[in-house]
Length: 103
Image (tube, rainbow, N blue to C red):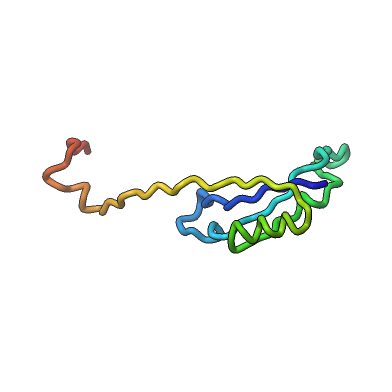
């Protein structure tokens, strides 16, 4: 029997938007270790389920799919997002700055 992880992916460090972070993913766990190819040095595995990533709109849909297919699953809840206050460029030149101007 295979097991899987249900999670919502975090934002990529190189992107400023929230693209591809709204959906829930179901990824299967490894059942066999990766092996190093002696000739080329590439890593490979005979487990084809490592290549499967299923996308769902909601967490409930992903859980329902796992239950229907008899897949053992674990749900990883996303951390709450930290809302940061944006600063404007003109804030660097305010007269009431808390830190002295160093330039």
